[in-house]
Amino acid sequence: MFDAPVETWYLWVGLAIASTAAVGLAVALPRAPPPDAAGAAETVDAVSASAHPTTGVHPLSADAVRIGPYRIWLRDDGRSGHAALAYGPVTPVRRDTALWDVLRGTPPEEAFSTPAEFRRVGAEARDRTPEWRSPDELTVRRVTWEGVDVTLVG
Image (cartoon, rainbow, N blue to C red):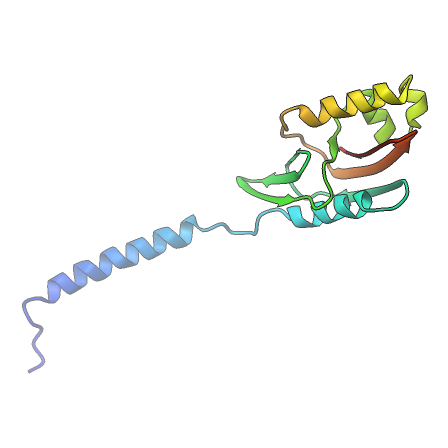
């Protein structure tokens, strides 16, 4: 009555395979959530939606950031997160450029000779393919100069 049936070994093999699969799945799951791209996007949107020139800073806890005209991506230890920007397009800014100087507080009339040049350089920056960069914080500045209205992000 308490003897195991002959088919029991199939049960044990199946249980061992299922247990191994469950352990493998648990090990493969990420240990932490992806970086908070939504928080960075909210900062960009808050500055972009402002009715007047504004500057905002958002600290980043990610290893790398990629900024596009309508989207932002954050990456950290193989995990990545992304968020769409509600108020785009924004202008991604690279270091050591005239746009970088404007992002950091230089008035656009000191960095560019004309508003048309400012508009052209901004359009070229938006047309570039987004690249991964390693910043500690995200700086956003909305600038208006003689009809040229841009939101710089770097």
